[in-house]
Image: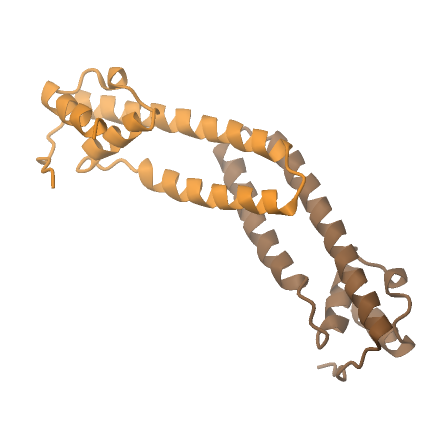
Length: 109
Length: 109
């Protein structure tokens, strides 16, 4: 298991991390809203409606968990968001090179 | 508590009851699909999306329970469907006058 040492943020890094998380959150939730609106518009069967419900259940659970700011897990959280396309390394500019390289390595796994 | 005696259906009555249940189901689920499509089309905020999710959770639970054909509870089920506007006494034409009057009385409660 990869060990990530406890992160010591400067105040500036803390701000960058929180802004990046907010940016990813806005991107993912906007995309989700657009996706649900599109899907809903073409629903004609009850089974499609329950599929939409299942999708919303999953997404809500995922999103609730993914965007809680937790500095002890942020390296993993950012790596996941990069892998999923909601964040780029560019959005994290200003974090220490050590942290960025960890995030980058994790995102490639 | 109102006591409803165990119902003895003729084969014809059984068919009428099942068809009426199916009719109410189609009406309610079609209305729900239209309602969800309308609501989804105007969603712009995540909170609206989670509201839609809550609504779907409730409706799915309700609908799953309401349309299970159970002849021992059908008088109550029909009364509820009439009260909610998914069925009319007209849809139950052919059931015995005794049953119809029970359903009608319950629906007015």
